[in-house]
Amino acid sequence: MIKWGVIGTGHMANIFAESIQEIDNAKLVAVSSRTKKSLEIFGDRFNIMKNFRFINNEEICASEDIDAIYISTLNNTHFDLIKLCAVNKKNILCEKPFCLNLNEAKELKKIIITNKVMFFEAIAYLSHPQTDRIIDLINNNEIGEIISIESTFGFKVRKIDPESRLFNKKLGGGAILDVGCYPMSFISLFLKNRNRIFFNKVEGEICHTNVDIAASANITINDKIECKIAISLREYFKNSSIIKGTKGNMIIGFPWLPEKKVFFEVYNKNNSYYKNFVHSKLSVYANQIKNVSNEFLKNNYDNESRLFDISKSLTNMIQLDHWMQNIE
Image (cartoon, rainbow, N blue to C red; front, top):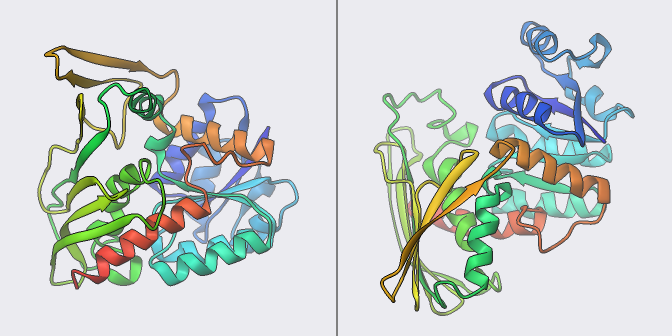
């Protein structure tokens, strides 16, 4: 069993603490927060022992009673916290995005490799059985060779608050870092080589707080698959992915945060159509914690896993950074 500590007591930390109760290969044993009140509220709610409620991050990372750390704090804190965990030989699950730019990503990869720790980025949908089913069907030639992928993720934020994590550049705000990592990671599942991805067209809108509030990209991968991505923090999109192949199409209604019971649609060119139902016993976040904990228990990452280790996260950040740089 993996004994987890969590850094932070906000929304995602609470989801992690609730979700870990669904599984039997992991247990939350510790928490750290620089705010004593929130530390006590969180600790009481999730039955964490008093001596495992840490007021500073250095202590939780140094504890020999903890196997792994989940970093749930604001985007701009991730870089330093990943380094802190790594030098203390703690395996890491870090909330997306794991850093703010390509330079940080490259440095973190070196630190993680040097300290011989395991790292995963928390892009939860990758652990849901629906994602496995989609990949399996495509690998089994259900829709033939992929021709194109179109993905959207957009929602409307009522107020552009310059102090909000979404719109404050210093906090790592912006649509690309917040939601762009989902569709970009999705097309990466079909990328045969990280050097075989080319941006054909990039557009975006920078709001008055100097972060991207909306963006789109036309991308070619593997020299032949045309991909279109559109994201937004100012309007609602269908939030779907459409994969078109030589033998048919696949429509995934909301791939980014699937429920326990979901379905996606498959259309074949022989005019047949069916819904592919996927039932998961666990929530999407519980699946993620279980899968990551299994990797930590094995202590030998399987490169065929959907999980984003540091190499896959670096590849994703290369694309996100290029996207951000070219709309500014």
